[in-house]
Every structure is written in C-alpha cells, then in structure tokens.
Image 1 (cartoon, rainbow, N blue to C red):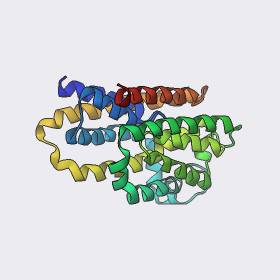
Image 2: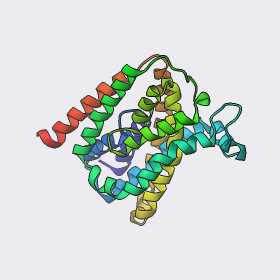
Image 3: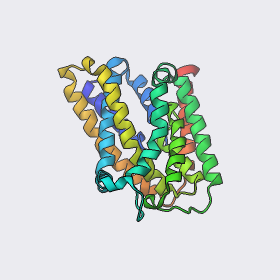
Image 4: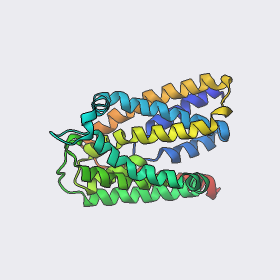
Length: 266
C-alpha cells in the first residue's frame, strides 16, 4: 500500500475518532498495526496530523477563541465562556501530563493498556448517563468556573490511552449537571490548547526524523484529518441533541474485544 493511501486512511481514522468518545489512540494503534504502519515515521505522522484535527475545532469555534484573546476574557462577568474557564479546565491535565509524560509514553502506549482504557471509559460513560439528571447548564456559555475545573479533573483520566478525552470530559460534565452538548463543546474547546502544546512538544523531539520526501504524505494526512474532524464534530453535536453516549460505550466494548482477539487471541 502506498504512503499516500496510508495517509488518507490514517487521516480519516484520526479525524473521525479524535473528538468522538471512542479513543483515537486505540483506533490508531489498531489501524496502524493492520496497515503495517509503525515505527518512528508513523509516530511523527500521527502527531503531525493531530494539528489538522485541532485546526477544525478552531475554525468551528473561531469566534469564541478570538473573544478569549481579549484581556477582559480573563475575568468572568456578564456570562459567556472566558479564557479563565479554559485555563482552569486545562491546568490539571497539563500539570499531571507534564509530570508523567515519560512514564505514560513508555508504559501505557501498548495494546493491553489501551484495551483496559476502552472498557473502563465505556463503563464510565454508561454510569454517567445513568446518573445524569435534568441538566442545569444547557449551554457552554453558562457553565461555572467550578464546573470547568471539575471537568478538567475528569480529563486527567484521558492520559490513560484508550480512555478518550471527549469520553471522560463529557461524562464528567453529565455528573456536574451539564447537557451533553455543552459538555461536548467545552471538551472540544479545551482540547485545542492541550493538544497544541502536546503536539508541538512531541514534534520538537522527533522533527529531525522527518525527510523532505515525506512532506506530501504529511500534507495529505493533515488535510484529510482536518476535513474529517470538522464533519465528525458537526455530526456528533447534532447526534447529542437527541441521543445518549450509550451507543458509543457499546461500540468501545466491541473495539476492545476485536483488539484483544487481534493482539492476543490468535
């Protein structure tokens, strides 16, 4: 299979799974293994195309991000999502992620740990749906700083590969009285600075392994991930208007079973 076709396939997988509560890490490990696309080049590629997925969120929520660039956005007044909400939502996971980055990369990025994360994340989502009551916060613009902080704490779970950033944060939002849509939108927005910092950090360490011959493949993957992520976010938000997270939880159980059979059952 040519590198360009692999770029399209991996780009679609990244775009579809990065912001849905299904674990992009689990899917990338499984698909990369199936395609035989592994090693240092694959690691650089998978980090780079995440920037395409990040760009899709920025485009969708550009008005909110531009408003957050204003100095007054660090103060909470008059309603609306502010930079302070985002800051308190990302500090917990960025702090823990910085301290544990090396052991996480060394010990947790393996099929067996991803399978555990897929199952545990699915259980968390089902419990959150069961515990969820009538939401008191229906819009991301009405959430409190306390809700932002606690959702940020739930996001720490996503440091375990397979758990899913959106799955853990949306579940956390449900526990805190947020609507599914509000929790999902906040999950997407706080993912941008976190993913941007993580991607740049990883790329700076491995950028010298990228050759000029790889540029076309990387550009294709970036573009495909951007378009696919944009479409998946728009679809997911519409889906949440009338549906629960249960179907994604059951899907995660299936993927965990398939992964277990593929890596350990043959």
